[in-house]
Image (cartoon, rainbow, N blue to C red):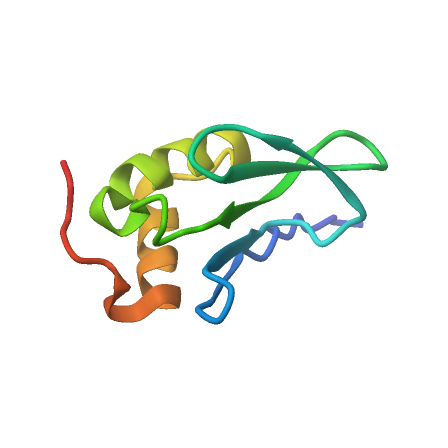
Length: 102
């Protein structure tokens, strides 16, 4: 029997009413670890695997001004390509991104 390996599904959403960006890689009960500028890395409460991140105060912390920095932080912890995460964040927040930092 051949086993297939499914890639986890990345979902990214932005709730403008509370200025929070949600990035979910593995839906699971989780605990979080607060990093910098409102970024919380979430880990599975079951096995400690990084399963997502939440960005509190996305605009307040000026993440639209430096999207590559946010993508690099998230990608490092979630084992993703920064370009992929950046693209998904941009799609979720639409024109909230004001510039492309390098």
